[in-house]
Length: 172
Ligand code: S3P
Image 1: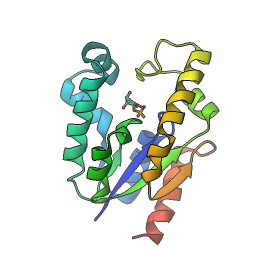
Image 2: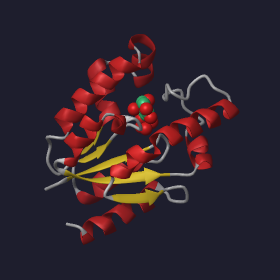
Image 3: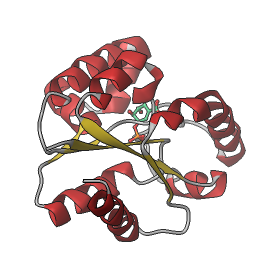
């Protein structure tokens, strides 16, 4: 059975939707960032700060390669996982890829209250808006690798999960 992989920008709901989706499908849920943090015994923000982004990306790549070999999982990726085309290739082998998107305002709102996103930390609202805009522009095309797309701006994670379940029923 194919994995279901959630890709998309920070704050689009990959982790919260993925967790609900896995529960409803009776599948195991794997959050790539959570697994990296567990393995490194430190938060993603701490890894970025102490070791740098390149080190994090190498850990992310190794984790994607391992997790992609699983079967029937629901997998939440990080917002930048698709930057490496080998990650995409590994995930595409045995997965349906669902892309979650959201408006700039929704992303800004959802990423406001966390120190857990190193690419957006230590910025005031206007700086965060600029940083999100820039990253969205750089990455937009990379998220196009998905099989199905959902705009979660107006959806709860439960609604997004239900939408994905409908899609999966039609595309089994
Ligand atoms: C990143 C997104 C984060 C995390 C890391 C880098 C990115 O994941 O992997 O901070 O490059 O967009 P979320 O999308 O779950 O916030």
